[in-house]
Structure formats: structure tokens, C-alpha cells
Image 1 (cartoon, rainbow, N blue to C red):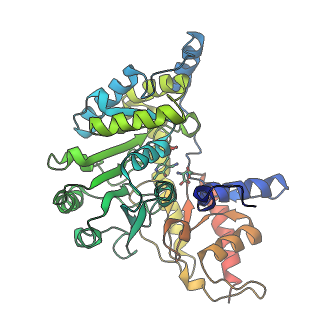
Image 2 (tube, rainbow, N blue to C red):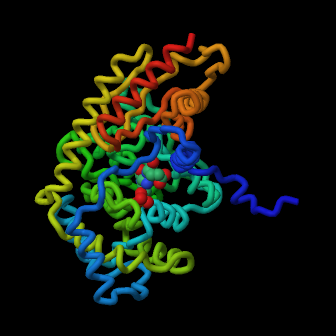
Image 3 (tube, rainbow, N blue to C red):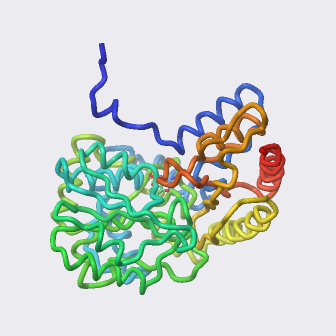
Length: 400
Ligand code: PMP
Ligand code: GLU
């Protein structure tokens, strides 16, 4: 008897978390695994943020908070949007959740009826299609190419829209490609979408601070589209706070209230202690925190370092990521090749081959909608990256 619901039976395990689970398992068996699969800063949370959490505990901030979060934090986020992104939001439009992942789930589950369509520029982040499936929405992918820096054009967006389209969901800087949409590119996409009055945009800006291209741009900055945009962000990546589980969204009031109702029946308000730590993180000016500046600098250096290393491997095609901490190379050159034991048919085979042969964990591009690529996370030290690429090169040279 099948005891599980169709909902769960149709759901895939998060591919990013799955590879991390597999690499932890191999590590526990004594293998020297290099984990380039998980997307999280290898840096620790800065001390001034940790101190705020310790104070929160000592001062007994250990009770339930309002479902949408502490008003001080929602106000601080509204200030951040004004100061850094020139976006006007009232604190009532802000909802704090247990990570940006929950923020995205809140919005999709609040907006999508069964059969309504969610447009995803592909490659997309692994959880977007799975959350859409949970809402019984239909996924409409727009494929992009490495030659076009994995970005969609306004014409492609126009073509993907139907009378069932409800949401256009994208990230910039993008996970997994690192691509970054300029102000002009965002404006053109916004112009196309604004012609259709029932379509909302979810703009996932979780990699805002890990951006080597210059000033971050939010699609909500254009007045003609702002009341159709839900901007999602969080402290996981920019402040090295993945384990604290704080994400947030800014939305039209009706949508923010729907997210509050939904969240109130599932998880309630996020951890009070984490919210007070996030308050310190968000209220502090990121430009003046040395620890965060060091982190951003390190990511850029590692990106450049990794690109140079990858250039020495035959058959790999790369674009230059402008942000986040991933590279998404095309490795299809190796399809059909074999080491005498295993034939590599696709990127999942290649990932498993590299994990089993040389214990380097990465994530298959298939999970992000592009089976020709693999995702390499460079949120690890240069020494580890060098060691990993040496191993990968040796393993790939065995494939003929
Ligand atoms: N969006 C993207 C694009 C991500 O890479 C992540 C990473 N986990 C998230 C959202 C969710 O982040 P979190 O739930 O840790 O805030
Ligand atoms: N966003 C990260 C990643 O893509 C963390 C893992 C996850 O939440 O899926 O690897």
C-alpha cells in the first residue's frame, strides 16, 4: 500500500541537499571528500551578529514573535530597501520567514491555483519547480544558452506568456549561473510583463551582496511594475547566516497578508533570537563591516582563480559569472565517453562518476533544468578548489 500522498510522491529531494547528504555519508565512511555542492558561505557569522543573538537570549527574547516577524526587524528591512535599493515599502508589506526558501513557498502557495503557470528562466534554482508542483501549478521553462550568459530576452518572455500565466520567477544574481541582469535588461522584461495585468514577478535577490558586476538592481524599482513584484531576500548568503534561517519578502499588502495567514498555520513567526541577530545584521551598513567585505573579496578572488583552473581542462565551456558563488560549466563534451567501466550519458552520470572516483561533490545541471552542465560551488578555500580541480582533471582525462 502506498501510504504517502501524491503530493509527496511527486516531489523530488532537493538536489543540492541530496549531494551534500551523499558527500557527508562518504566523509563519515572515511573518504576525503571535497564538497563543492552546497551553496553556503564557508565563512562564520560575524561576531557582532553573534553577540546580538547572545544578548537576545540573556534578555529573554525567547517568546513567540508576530507571525510576520518583529516590527523592529520589519522596519529595519523597509529602511534597507529604501537606503540600498531605493524601494519604498511600509513595514506592513514585509514578511519574515524561516529562510528565503519559505518566503518563495509562501508566495507561490498564496498565488497559484492548480493549472496556473509559473514561468522559470532555465537554468533555475532547484526548489522553484518543486514548490510550484506543491501548489499544483504548471512549470513553463524558458531555456537560455551559455552564449547568451544564461539570460532570457524580453522576446522569449513574451512568447512564454499565456492566459494561464501567474508568476515569472527568477534570481539575479542567479543560482546556478551567477548571471546578473542589468537595469536596462530588467526594465525591458518588466515592460513585457506589465502589459499583462494578472502576472506577478518573484524577484529572488538572495545573492544581492555577492555581486562582482557593480550596483545591485531590483526589478521593483520601476514604478509601472512595482505593485506586481514580490522581492525576496534574506541573510543566509550576504551575512553568512545560513543556519539562522531568516529570509524575508516585500509585497503588495494583500499578498503579504496572505503569506502571514499561510505561515501562521504552518510555522508561525521565525526564531525570535535569529530575528534579533538579523536585526543587527540588516541595520548595520554592510559597507562598513570588515568581515563581510573580506568575504565578498574572497568570493571574487576564488571565482577568478577557479576560472583559470577550469581553462586547463579540455572540453569545458564556461561563462563568467557576475555574482553568487557558482560556476555552471557545460561539460557535454564528455557525454558518450567512458573510463572502461562507466559510460557517461549525462551530467548526473558525470557528477556521480566524479563523486565516486575522486570524491568531489558537485550538483548535476539537470536539477537546474540544464542537463549539459554541472554546478560547482566555490564557497570554499582556494586550496580546496585547487585540489578539487586537480582531481576532476585527472578523472576526466580517463574518459575516452
Ligand atoms: N534562493 C536561492 C536562489 C538560493 O540559492 C537559496 C539558497 N538556499 C535560497 C533562495 C534560500 O535561502 P535561505 O532559505 O537559506 O534563505
Ligand atoms: N541555496 C543553496 C544551494 O543552492 C543551499 C541549499 C538549498 O537550500 O537548496 O545549494
